[in-house]
Length: 145
Length: 145
DNA sequence: CAATATAAAGACAAAGAAGTCCAAATTAGG
DNA sequence: CCTAATTTGGACTTCTTTGTCTTTATATTG
Image (cartoon, rainbow over all chains, first blue to last red; front, side):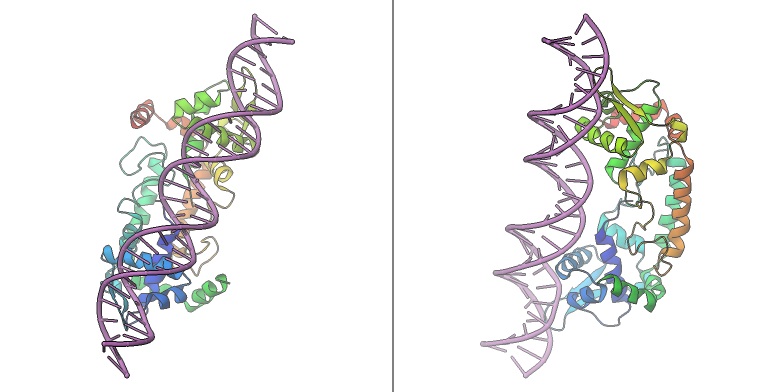
């Protein structure tokens, strides 16, 4: 359960993409979601390798979702960015939590973790994109200043 | 909710200390809890400044808890190490979660966060030290190799 | 006082995350 | 074919975390 800024960027960019019909360029996504463009370009590259995005080079090209937004879970995105085991271990790192009942925090942490992961697996990009209100977008824009 | 290795080290070292009656040297703690000694020395120094530990220099000196282990919460320790707001924000960092209902993850994350923080506030170092079984200690020692 | 054991503090190195820049490859349109 | 718009890839910087090393300050014991 160690999430970096890259996860935030990935979710924000994919969210933005899910709200559009047509492909968007990295530049458009970066400015819409307020993400450093060159950094996002690398993230996009990673997400293509992980099968979350597809891209089209050249004029008129851009980035598209590899699957419908309703079928992409947050869990999938996080694992693509942070690695396949990112959601398994305890944030305290006292030990790899999933499967070590000897950890003193295990009895409390594990059920919570299970609920979080369950939620992430259940929640699709489409839902997040829809749930993000215009109000929140304005807030983000203000934060950016 | 951004926790680093330092938090793990702090909890392990304090746990070890809580199991003893008398002060222990940084060296003893480091080897018992398998933490790099010089790094732990700095952590101890921080925890002294934050009022969690007291130290005694010179021969026969060492590190002691500033308060009884039953009165030190995990929350306190985490905030001492990571900063006072470490437990407030969302691990996805989509926005500062505590108090931003516009975040699309807020409705799900915030109750979970509240439960985690509640647990951390309720759980004392003494409980964790007690709950840590000898089996776990052996496991940690094996892991160290 | 001398020797020893200890914490404290600072400089430094290593590794990873975040961010920037630039050149190359690819595609569309004129 | 040429140009513009794109992604791709690599080199590089900067910052934070983690880790090491050395010196200094402080206390105890004999």
